[in-house]
Structures are given as structure tokens and as C-alpha cells.
Length: 143
Image (cartoon, rainbow, N blue to C red; front, side):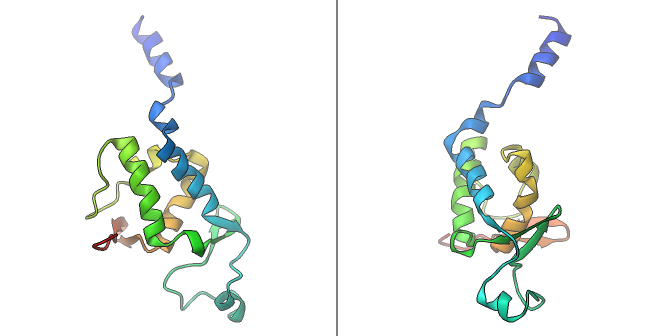
């Protein structure tokens, strides 16, 4: 096989790790983490959608699509659970509970159309904080 043929064949090979159940489950979870339209919780209804005093956002504009976080299934511990499984499956290494989250690695196993959901979910769940442009895991002992 020539170098050119090898390069071309690499372009069309799919990373088999993307088909692993925990990775597929994480992508499915990310898809279902948001509902259509603005949040309709009692707080948002009482303030007519003004979220200025909220610690974490309820409603998001994801590239022109208004969605709301599904609170019942997107707590920090819920997100961490599915993320840890997918991370381990894809990278064959444990997710480090300390320091910056490697967003490039995370995006490598997330379907491209779901990339816009990653950071909003991670921040809104409280799993990460943005510090000087870096996403820092907020994993507590016992999580």
C-alpha cells in the first residue's frame, strides 16, 4: 500500500471505541439531557424566565435552539457517573478528579452534533467550573 493509499484509508476508518456501550450511552444521555423550549420550573415561571439570580442556568440557547436542562437526570453526580464510564471506556484511563478537564478528549468521543451541549451541561450540573477559560472538575469526595 502506498503512503497516499494508507492516508486515504485512515480518513475512512471509524474509531471502534466510539461504538463501545459506555460511549454510546454518554452520547444518548447528552442528547436527552435537555428538553425543548425554555425552562418551565416554578422558579422560572415566577420570574418570567429571569435567571439573573440563579447559580446555574436553566434555559440555554444552543446555536439558535432554546432548550432547558432536565433537572431530574442531570445533577453533577448523574453527569459524573456516565462521564466516568465513557471516559474509562474510550481512553482506558480513569477520569482524573482533580484539575482541568481535557475537553479535546471529551469531544473526541462525543458525536459532533452534540458538542454544543457539552459545556452547558457540565457547567449547569455543577460538575465543572470555568476558571480563566479552563473547565475544572468539581468532584467532591464520595462522588
